[in-house]
Image 1 (cartoon, rainbow over the protein chains, first blue to last red):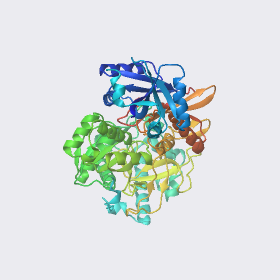
Image 2 (cartoon, each protein chain N blue to C red):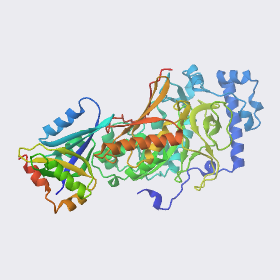
Image 3 (cartoon, each protein chain N blue to C red):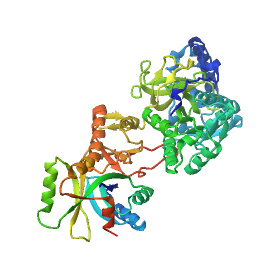
Image 4 (cartoon, helix red, strand yellow):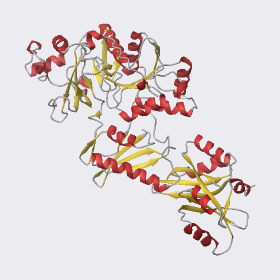
Length: 144
Length: 442
């Protein structure tokens, strides 16, 4: 039920983000979701990509520091108030969201990536709620 | 892991000189010192003039306390007498010439007679033996060969032992590793920072370090830390020892660690080492830190009297478990000239390194940038963000930066700013590492 997110360390200097994106592009890897978190000196790019293993490999070859994190991709109906409903469930179940970002899909429903401090616990407690967690395969199928 | 779990077998190359009693040592040093002073007084105009200025004649030397009456010899003195002014023999007796690896100013030239080369090899043989090397070893020398004394110094010492020597010289890192694999190198000789770079490249090339035959690492020519030793030992699966020397005095061979890894045994039959306070120039109390001042007592071509090494260390007089009776030098803490004075606080790059290496996952690739902003000194520490410290959360990385800043503040009362940088963005060095960039214009 969990999806692998790749995070890349990025110094704040011109051209680095472009280099990362073209490295992935040349390897034929599709970036499906992306967010950048930054401090004054550096940033961390987090992505869901079409081929996790290969992305790690080609980025490491270019001396990028990468790390793997497990996140949850959750489908949210495309109508007002639905995100609030899902977040309310998290609150009721005592789940702490570290960060979240939206996914680009061609479907009608919105897809949002959530990073919980404890992803296994999140999967467990959301099992018997109406919140729909997508599997890795389902996520990948979205870009096929 | 390392050899620590096995019983350590201490070998001593020259028990006659490495296991002297205190009286024997004092007697021998005094005799050799007198002979050296006689020779420089007769043959080197510089020393004769210096001695005459204070009304000293070599016969006046009765015991070691008289040595401290003599003036120091400095790097500047060596430069002023460039190239051959301080040689104590005619050039025709000199069979080898080396030059200091000094990074600043005009080089200094040193010479060796045939006897000097023989004795040099003898001294280095002792250090290699202390570090575990025997006739059965295959020694890869990854020190630069050339004017720098490191390559040739270790080379002839290793040959003297009867080891198989691979004169690789420095650089060409991937080839170094291929040779290590194919020639079954058992002992590696280089700078500690290059050893670490080799370890990194081994991993990068996908070579299992355990598949190598390496057992011993003898590292010198720059200050390093205990943490760095642990890092090198655990990544290359070797026992790493520290050794010390400087070209103005002889090159490698002044002192070297035994397998107790607890200070470098000084070859006291060839050198008298004093420790002084670099500010007052007075000797420090026994066992305290200060600048090493070295007098050679067994050199023909290029003797030096009370040479100010600029290296900071201290003398350990307690007996070592290995059986040698020679006194030891503590790990070199730094040089008086690479000591940073930041807002009046003295700090050596090696002290910053100790802090960094205490933090889980941090590797010893760092650079210190000193600057002056609005008349205040600033210290910026660049640390590479590797996969061991990498996380997807910016706040955790920021917390790591703050943790290092806090620890440096607590230990040394210095406000530093730590900045994580991308891996491999700090330059790697094949010889001596250049850790400090001082941008201050004073």
